[in-house]
Amino acid sequence: MLKKEARLITGGLSAPNKMPGPSINLPAAACQTGQLLAQVEGTPCFGCYALKGRYRFPNVIAAMSRRLQALTNPRWVEAMITLVKDHPWFRWHDSGDIQSAKHLTDIFEVCKATPDSQHWCPTQERKHLTLLDPEVVPKNLMIRLSMSKINGGPSKAWPWTSSVSTDPKQVTCPASKQGNKCRSCRACWDHDVAHIVYPKH
Image (tube, rainbow, N blue to C red; front, side, top):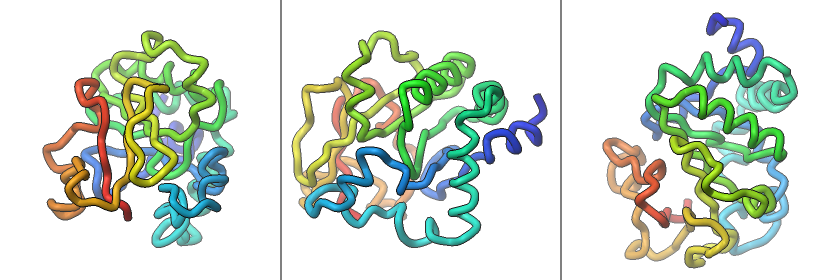
């Protein structure tokens, strides 16, 4: 499959400035758990960055909507493989989240077919992870469960987690100290890093 066709099928990849590689984003309003948490003060989703700023530009909204609709295309997996395979680092969802068990299974298929790419998928969708044995997750995919409360500690519900803190001393993500970029850090993708703390933003 040519990349031009793959972009038409999937809606194309996104290019977050912070990341060492591309991502794919979906509307934050389509987050199943996140849209509920966005109404609750004290959660990371309250005041979500993906519901403001450049994510509100009409062209960005249109692109995210196309990507959401594309998830049901029977050639989506094949097209995503075509787009991802040349990138050593890939993030799932700089906006949005896992939509269904089928969506997660399709992500697994993309990861299995791109063994030279390292994938990271942050998620609030606990309901899908509770049905999983971590051993069935492709080895090149890091699924990191996001905590639902600011200043909350790691959960035992999943081996790899992340949280948001208002205390700079608790923050382990270095991006805020280096121009809001990952630079050489790859902790989010690293299975040896059980928990990551991000600053509230």
